[in-house]
Length: 166
Image (cartoon, rainbow, N blue to C red):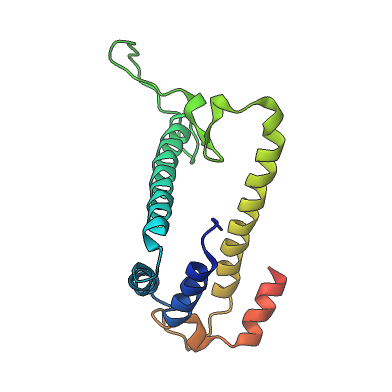
């Protein structure tokens, strides 16, 4: 987590507790209270920069997806044009692919192992979440309707077992 003042983090935890199923309500409650805190102007600058970082990461993700599709990733053929003309066709360099918040072409060879380890660690968390969702789906009680919540239809010991087995 980014380094924020502890009181701001504690408030976020409290707002999360108050609004477990509605992140927007949690954020709204948190924002209204943060604005009233002494010194909040300085924090708000860091929050805006954090949001800017997220927007830029989203832009990089979009570019990465486009680059991957262009090389035949995501199960499709590579995107090629039968009439390539350097005057009319722009092909973005794969060196612009973003990894770990950086342009691939700017990464030094000596950094690759550490970046790979960090990426694997993140992927492990995402894979756990995906596998957990599938495991939970396999335990859906027959009485559970599709619009019912997991908590209202699944017993905690079953969920705990799924966590330990995933």
